[in-house]
Image 1 (tube, rainbow, N blue to C red):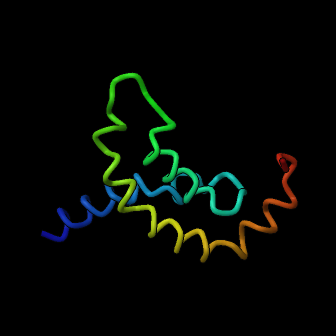
Image 2: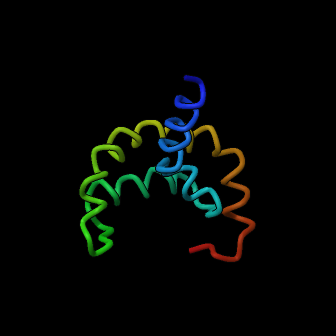
Length: 85
């Protein structure tokens, strides 16, 4: 039972906007990613994103919390990076 729970949690974390975009130093990038997925701004050609849209809507507030917790790390990374907009 513990293995099944671990596998399910791993699958849900794979779709987490914050963890998906962790390499980008921009503040609140995970929240922006989830917003774009919910709004349908990304399309992969086969409609898979449309089936997973409710999961991104559920993940949206969780990404806000995770991005807020990572602000002390992401703000210095953003200003020290060369990709500053």
